[in-house]
Image (cartoon, rainbow, N blue to C red; front, side):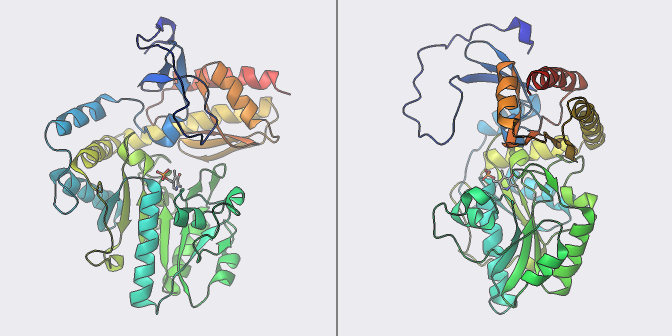
Length: 401
Ligand SMILES: *Cc1c(COP(=O)(O)O)cnc(C)c1O
């Protein structure tokens, strides 16, 4: 898609937004198509997309391989109910097992739903093996989704008073602080759950050392390590999974976002010894449907192609380098993150304004917190697209005091 050739979309018409619940402040325009790193709205304006549906379109918008897989599966089989096997369901579970080193998968339709499954699995395991231990230690500022238990497990300060009472059993500790984890452990603690990189919090990396210490600690204490890799998994950090950087393997792994390449798909993955669900404990109407899992297979196969992940690592290093230069020039606070999940610390609360200005100039960037910007482009983003985004950001920062 070439921005200068933009033409108004033919479906342009009077648009009312009134029939939609207000859940966020959306700009008053309508997106109609996307290709790779580009989106186009109803008026024909093109946008360079460094959000990608919140790190969901890992291969960019409407990648040919995904479109082909969807068309092929759509005319073959969509859903045969979760009480039967389908070919793509089996194949995707095999692919996940092969790449993760874990053994079994339960498919879900959203990250939060898979997190709920992880919490249930850990509690069930605690019932069976740890005398009913149920507490899961989670991190301050962590984000695990928007169902009630996932919100309770999250450490978002703005959520503390929301939808009370919460689900009990999620004591919080500081990220990268092992002593606090040790102090939080009681006879009722069954697990520790965290993101290898806290995305929503503003891209804060759990250090490799902390992850290794947590692995040792949980093993010694007979507890489970749950990694929420909904944002960091499927190539985002330049490795298939974020935990590979630290060389640890969790007992339970949660995947989402990139796994579906843009369609709803998530996964609860676990070590054989932890898989203690009995028939009837877990399920769901759409879970593991043939359509979604066929797309997941295609995503996994693309990411696993020789050279793909090294390319993500190189592109990530290039983006980090360009951002670091920008940071020095505009006296910002530096760059955080790994691979193609990066943040520019701004050092002041100008994030939303900068993101809004960039949006006006046709670049989509997210400000997860007022004092930083987050970058989660397609894993296939090019150096030219990065240069173009940096150029716009440079102009915007120039004009922002
Ligand atoms: C997005 C996200 C979730 C929630 O996933 P949904 O699909 O929005 O329910 C949970 N954990 C992390 C780390 C995420 O980034």
